[in-house]
Image: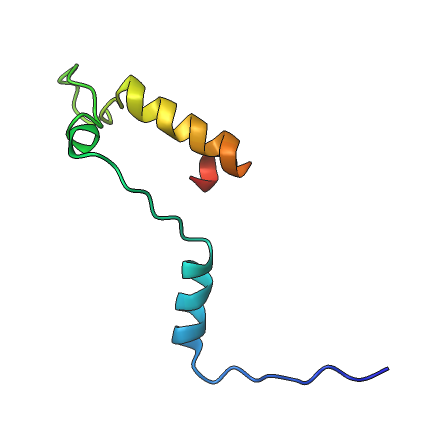
Amino acid sequence: MQNKPIYRRRNWSEYHAALIQKGSLSIWMEEEAIKNWFSSFHTCSAGRPEIYSNKAILMMLILREVYNLTLRNL
């Protein structure tokens, strides 16, 4: 049995950036979809996060199913 070669990391910032990029997923979206990402319904409540549109939620659910991810991974 051969021993595996040992690789020593010397540039940790580059290695860390490569690990982050490894799980990256780029998506092309239409301009209209980006403009309508958030719902036009506003509650005017201080501190409340914006509400996403139904199309944005549907897109994230489809991505979850296609890539077998949890919603936290998206």
